[in-house]
Amino acid sequence: MHNYPSSQWLDSLGLIRGKPGNAELAIPGSPRPVGQAVDQWLPAPGKTCHGLFQISSAADAPDRVHGGVMRLIRTLNLMSQAEVACRAVVVVAGPATPCVLKSAAYRERIAEPSLEENPNAPWWSALRQQGVPVLVCLQALAAQGLSLEEVEAGIEPVQSGLSAALALGRHGFVTLSL
Image 1 (cartoon, rainbow, N blue to C red):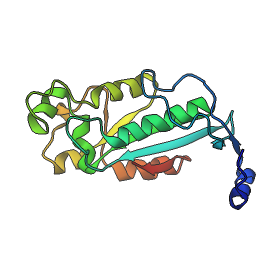
Image 2: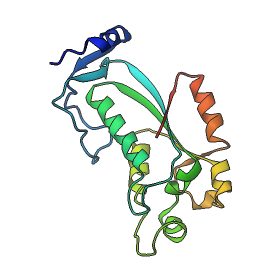
Image 3: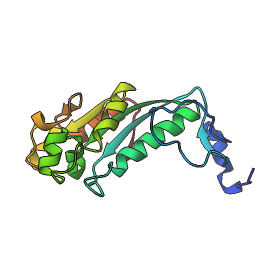
Image 4: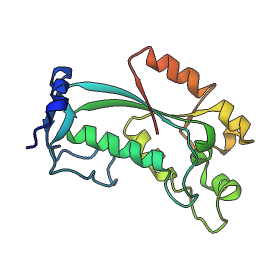
């Protein structure tokens, strides 16, 4: 174990230093997080964290899963392996909005016609199956000329992604921008 004196005050915050456990992944079928053999700061087991994950940047490439989606999944998996309950909500807005489109709309508007499906679609489904609400900002849809009918089934519209973030913040959700 390494000694990091400059961060010892983190002990007082209810964090623990250790290796993540081998508990089941929060999102089955997703990549296992790296760093399993490294001592690291982990939230205390048995606690619940509340995270509002805002995905608002453009995707790196239309044929790959949005980087924010993968960071969200890795975070949920790390919390699961540390045996920390994580109540998560996802808000998709801004340039990221097209990543919630149904595959046909995504292919037509964003990607090449040869792309079979929106690469993000399986992950939205997996998140919802684990009880993670995925919300899309109606303002962002309108600004990009997209319609609610083009959005993947099960993704919930909100009038404003920022308003949803403010409302959830009042209930203890910490906003994480991906």
